[in-house]
Image (cartoon, rainbow, N blue to C red; front, top):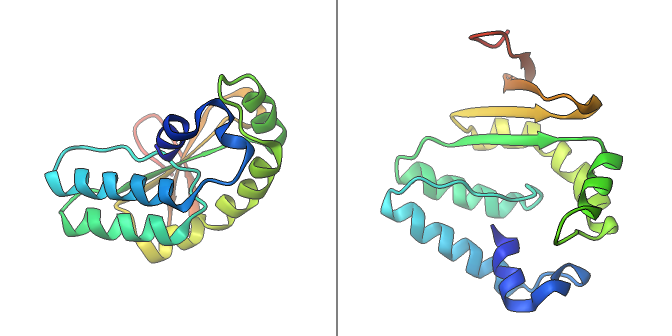
Length: 147
């Protein structure tokens, strides 16, 4: 998680200013090195940096990983509210900026990066709902399959 590296380098006020590019580079290098080992990995990101995710997806596929995207989706108001309760809250302007951008990239990630699977999990309305994103459609989770 790039936030962890950022927090280690800049302390508790890390979200008050833009992240230095060195943090992003360090995070990307660390993930790249892990991918080359063949170890399993969960990469946690806001999903709004298409070029970085494209590069890491390519490295993962080149190293024969199964690439699965899991997109967590909530309402903007709930995200802002939940952030305020975190030990390391994220600035509201950043949440608002990222919110629309990450949603607009779902189709692009699916069509261009072609992950092996793409899932969307929502908590809109206070309940978890699970979907598979396939061929530009949301398939609702049934007991043992997606329709």
